[in-house]
Length: 423
Image 1 (spheres, helix red, strand yellow):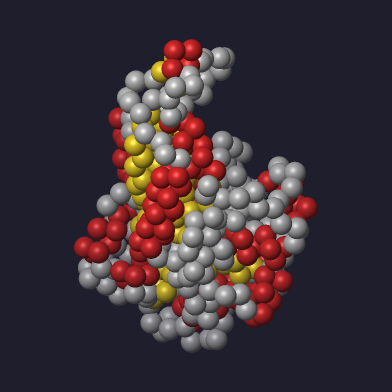
Image 2 (cartoon, rainbow, N blue to C red):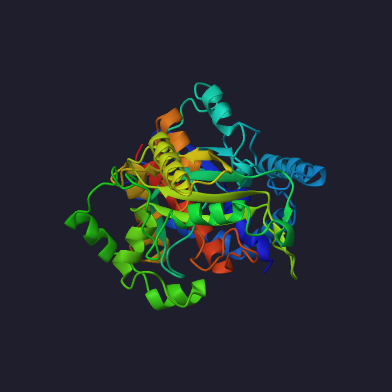
């Protein structure tokens, strides 16, 4: 299968906003005959669905690359999406879709192509449309992440936030030759390596003072939620192609992915990074790192804590270089109430399609639109992932298994019917 199929969640089904039609069914559960009919249709037409998906992901709608050709591909992707929806019976920013069987709920789609570039202007648009396009919206559904296993489905109720930092150390704009200047300078790279090395220890513990102050204390009830989650550590390690993690138990792994902050160092701009040897002393270097935030951590407070820490470390080096710290991205964490109505409906739909209870999980990454929709539209948000843990999202060989794609399609059909029962 095309390696880009893993982008399906972001390209095909970015966000579903459900406008429930009242009183369409009076029975306490979806009619079995109707579900069976829908499932049979999906099975019979799965080759068509896969072909459509292949055609969609073949469009190079990469928002990260600021190249005119890729920008045109984004516009083409939006046009293809609009045309597909219209052929299914929808009107663009309208409702009432589905020529095969009337849907039990009204659906509004938001399909946006700038997720990789930070969803530029999306928040402004949502704020502007909250009393128009979003009027009457009852629930928000996002499908943009993965299960924590290869075969067991999951529902996601929380994500970490992200504060992205750059720290620049500068002597001058021009590089130096180490034979001419080595030994008589405060080298910017040496200063930067010391700064980056002061951020986190070998066990993954963040060394910035105060960074853990707002992390909620761990309770016995929360520990039990981690114990209930199915996670085969050996399978997880093998699928990740990692020899050893920092922690040895399932509970520790999940807690450090979801409920504790983490700090990652991403790279150094201005350093010599090409093959071969070059005896250069960079005159200006920029270190890049980020901190994944958990609920109750404040972005502004983290920015101050990090800046203060780096200034303190730099001052102790007595360097003549100049240091500048900047936070270039500040995204808040998100968490939802798993007792909300649509979470219960999603659980029932998963039992119907997969015959098992879902793992209730959080995501260690950041999906900023979840927090944004929850705060602006003031409606319940649920993340219903379709992909397996080994899909390799954002990596060179993204994929989605055919089984996940087809059974995931059935899941959304069952979920819509479950939602209709609530009204």
